[in-house]
Length: 316
Image 1 (spheres, rainbow, N blue to C red):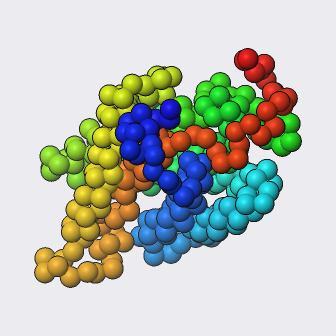
Image 2: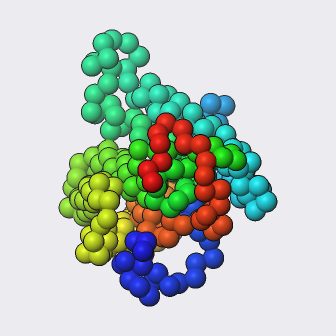
């Protein structure tokens, strides 16, 4: 019985039109598009976007479109689609890592020892150095979802033909780990963003507490091979708390950017509280809920049952 059915037998009987991996890939594609939009808003502060700053802005929507194309290819040829998608995700990881390096360079002083060039104050007021890591996390999530795990929750990925790769963890556990990492990145990013206000509003601590708790719960779930129903309830409630925190935060950021008369001024939304920043919490919660879905991929069970396992012997 999969986690969603353990959580609620009624939910387990729901006919969901997409599999868990398909849902993860769809959300990954949407994330690429929204990351491009979010970065465009952030880079617009300078009113002069450099060619280098345009790379993630263009890459996000293009990557999202290419992933949708990969989804169409998967209808007829899943291995080919997985390879195509993996190329996109690897490019996403490169863009993310390059973004982290460039943001740290922009935040630091131009010369001096490393300890002197980077300080907490410089990181608070500099470009969000953890923001680009979302490209990397989306890549890891997408690469995990692109390959069929057969049998489900075995950690054995079916690559091409009879070739198999055995991972040290089941795919569901990998999803929990990545969701926890995303929650931690969202939390640390919010801490640095809110530090600019001097923590004058006590409500700013809410996303910090919720995010840290969510990361901890996700990592505990990754360790539990067979979590109980009470464990799953705590996890699901925590994911919904992330979603609510993100939606409420987005509304508060929107309200904060309005003028005293409630008028929308584009400049305030570019330079003020980032509207899409809190939505990262909601996004992480959505990924976390997807991890509870049935891990059995349509058409995977029993297909090519005997294969070559790379890196380990499949237990009987």
